[in-house]
Amino acid sequence: MDTVRRKQGRAKMDVLAVAQKFCAGWTSLDAQAFSVLFAPEGSYTDIAFRITRRGRDQVREHHRIWRTAVPEFAMLNEHAYESGSTVIVKTVCYGTFSGGDLGGSKLKATFKSFRARAISVFEVNGQSQILACTEYYDRSTMGDETPFDQLPWPHKDLAEAALSTRMVTAGRRVS
Image 1 (cartoon, rainbow, N blue to C red):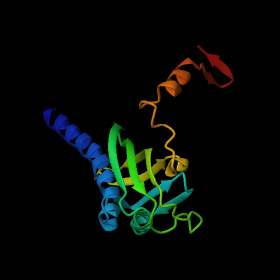
Image 2: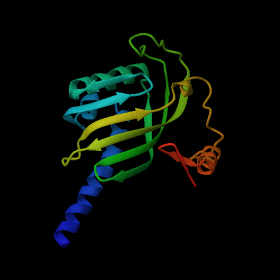
Image 3: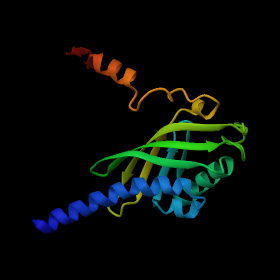
Image 4: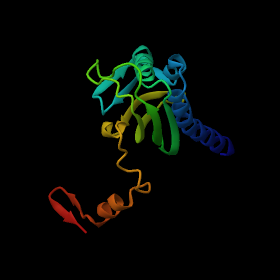
């Protein structure tokens, strides 16, 4: 039983370490090192730009494109949550959109600095490789304004509204 606990504890630590490696990988200019955090068939979905990259080669290219557009980009792990093979990472990201274009040249460099929060959700395999990553952030935060700077995290006003709302399930209101 003790061996099982140690193995489970070690697996849990490996899963949480993925969050730290993910943030360090985005902060690094090494697209190859970032791509090996993913399983060979792993995928990366960027909701804000409506793109999914499949396989390490495309994940590496995604990193390269982003880091070319935002050369001094940094991602800091604010908090990581895990449940089984799912990891949710809440991050703070910094940079200046001063390099290449994004979105297939649809979004031109603004030369403006930004600070934004993002959420990344991973599914991780038994080797602590990312099978799927879905990233959520608001592109409007890439301009001059960061709309939630004045709000504590989590946003108190949004949390209070959510808690005061009754959940509706299958057409029934639940109290």
